Each structure stands twice: as C-alpha cells, then as structure tokens.
Length: 303
Image 1: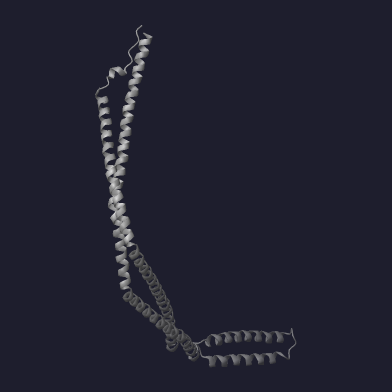
Image 2: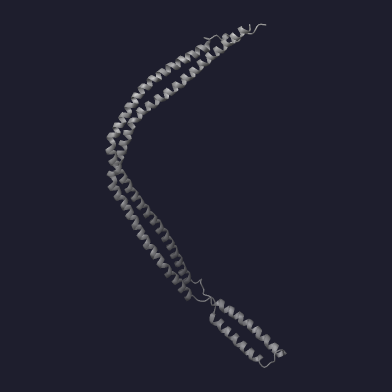
C-alpha cells in the first residue's frame, strides 16, 4: 500500500511538472511573439523614416537658399533700422545737452528773482528802531557811570540797561525776520515754476536718451546676429549641395536594408504567432481536461 501511494504521488508530481512546462512554454511563446512584433514594427518604422532624412535635408537646403536669396534686402532693411536708431540717439543727445544747459540758466533766474524780491517786513523802520535802542543803551551806560557799584543808584541804572538790552534783542530779531525775502511774490513763483519745468524736462530727456540708446544697441545686435545667421545659411547651402547625393544614396540603402529586414522579421513574426497559437492550444486543452484532473489527486491510503 505504501508503494502504491508513492507511485500515485510520483505520478501527481509528474503531471504537475507537465502542467508547469505547458504554462511556461505558453508564457515564453507569448513573450517571444511580443519581441518579434516589436522588432517587426521597428523595421517598418525604419522603412518609413528613411525617406524623411532626404526630405529634411531638402527642406533645410530650400530654407537656407531662401535665406541667402533674401539676405541682401533684409540686410538693407536692418541697416536702415540701425541708422534710424542711431539718428534717434543723436537727437536724444542733443536734447539732453540742451536740457542740461537750461538748468543753470533757470536756477540763476530763480536766484535773481529772489534777490530782487521785496523783504517780508519794513527793514528801514526796524533798522532805525534798532539804532535808537542802541543809542538809548549808550545814554543809560553814561548815566550809570557816576554811581558806585552796589549803590541803589547804580542798581537802578543797571536794571534800566538790562531792560534796554532785552528791547535791543527783540528789535534785532524783528529786523532779522523782516529782512527775509518774500518768496510768495509772482516773480519768484514764476521763476521757480520754470526751474521745476526745466528739471522735469531734463529728467525726461535722460529717460529718452537711455531708451533710444538701448534700442540702438538692440538694432546693432540684431544686425550682427542676422549676418552670422546668413553666413551659417550660406555654409549650410554649400554643405548640403555637396552632401545631397550621398544623403540620398544612404537613405535608399537604409530603406532597402529596412525593407529586407521587414521581410525577414515578418517570417519570424509568423513563426512566433504559430508557436504562440500552438502553445495556447496546448494550454486550452490542458485547461479543458485533456489531462485528467483525477490523476492530479493523491488517492487516500488504506488502513
């Protein structure tokens, strides 16, 4: 009985191994089919891509020839733009120079207007008043001279002198304030307004000079870059005209090789499809019961 059980178990293991082999073969066939399909698609794409190299080269040549043909007219156009930009720079420089020169003139006009403006107060009257206070102080000092320091008469005279000095200080302050120029008069206001306007004009001239200078630099760079591009286009024309026969030949060779590879890959693909179908059929047969399920069961041992 033990021997019978061992034999049955071995048969089960063999059947399981067979099932595993079938499944692995089906998996390998599917993987091989996918690889062959990818290889076939790659060669088909290579056949399509081969003429594109020639097409691109011809398009590049056509574009470069067009650029070279149009170069003289476009160069002239860009040179005109640069010349116009340079003229704008020269005009802006002149405007800036004029604006800078106008500032000192207007500032001098403001100073002259202020110098000519009337004072805020009555300077002659206040000057006379200050002179009178100073004269009164001199008299008070002379009046104090006969008295001895510390005596009541001296103290009284000294107090009067101190009060007079306060009046003199006040008169001096009033005279200083009155001597200030009256900046609110129309002449001063008009001169200051002109000076402000001139300063604003100068600021505007500086901004415009900076802007047109930047435009001129950009135009010069654009012209220089265009000339480089045309030189490169001319070189490309020469190169492609020389290389075009070889490019066409290589493209044809590549296409022919790819077409031959497609034929070979198609045969391999069909073989792989047949193999995959065969392995799939084996698997379906196995799954539908071609191999008895009962044979995969281990019979119970008898006591």
